[in-house]
Image (cartoon, rainbow, N blue to C red):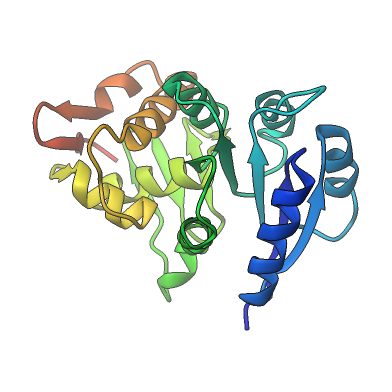
Length: 234
């Protein structure tokens, strides 16, 4: 049985109750909140949640506004639910620190699959018995502490951004395809028009660039192939 604690934030109480019942049946501990204020109160309590499922469209503060207020202080993985067909909501969510997104109305089984995938990658560092610290181009990545420093300055990354950088640095000099990175980091197959990985890479570059002027050139886009971390002096 899973022991992870989930928080569902959605003003559709009927939907939340249905999803909560399904996820509880699958072995998760589930709490629900109907708006951003209720969610904030629950998140401020000592008991920590392992994952947050957050609806974008809610009365009062939207899910995007709530997410923006939570990051980067709260590093709990987040899956965004969007009822809009507009891709901009999904991209904004990813840029603000969401780990994944799912369109509403969502199939409970698909949501369960996404939750399992996000939790797996949140525990990514535990898959290696002796995580190796990686240092190159002024970047120091410590898998054990889940910490990245650029020129000795700490850089706050989401779980996905950290794992993308770890994969690229481990394979520095090699081109990793979008298909490979999506499967290794997002734990799912790359689908047509799926820009999630591109948004995470773009966000990663921006964060690294704040401390490293050459950061945009360190992660190279290889057109039609994928991404490559440029190997250099440690």
